[in-house]
Image 1 (cartoon, one colour):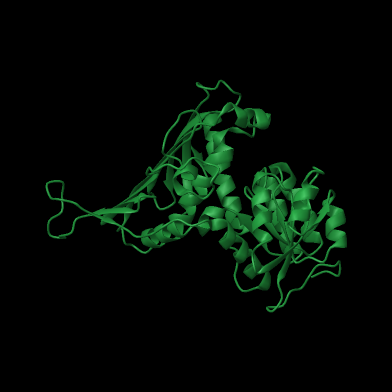
Image 2 (cartoon, helix red, strand yellow; image 1 turned 60 degrees about the vertical axis):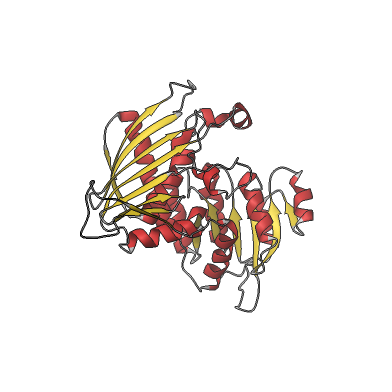
Length: 357
């Protein structure tokens, strides 16, 4: 650690954290940090002066300038939830102060910025954790264990469906969502790409067809993606923010009460021994291994695995990372690979060509 009032918590001390950015997701992180036993929530920085009331309620000191905050406060780490283009400059400034970083996803706005942030963290010997929070949902972890553990046999293919209707208020509150840099590829598909990588493995090629037929915005409202993992396994993703459906991660998983809860299977993992729906967690297989084939009856088993809010587990993990007890579940390098695949989808949609990752 540098001698700039950065903390150096021992195993008996609470991790001293501050947050930079208190928008929708930044507010979530701040609320959790103020109530998690492993950490002490010290300060909140946001350019909106109305956030001072929130800081006061959470027992934190309010700042409008993050540089003033990291200069004055004794901290172990920061939680950064800012617009994508600010991730690298703010993250690098914090790294230079010797502060461990929990950066909300995506790691950065561009691959080049992501690489720069990773270099800053390495040069200053600080940990960099990227907030792909779904990796902490117990259902995601269980699915990964089943797939990678061979319970489904060799994976034949994977299907992903995400469709939720975004209301006009969503675009009025953030007009940038209609413009380059918005759209479901960079806002939503990046989650599904990370889920596929976390559960199954690295992606080697993507081909995307995009459409703005419904909303007529500058960016897409619908994308159909064909992809191939590096081991040759194919997968498909259909994403749209322009039609009502019960098939979307946010509405089916119940992680955020803002979204109306529905029940519908959004992923299908197809294997040679068995197949699995998600989040229904219905395992489909032949009970008698001597009688397999479409003429024989199938057995279905409901697996007793439930969802849970992953955000507190993610923050506790960050505290353990700072203590040196664990390594980041989503490192900067890991999140960079997710961003590279997502950018390849974007490029493919514009060039109408398959893109090697």
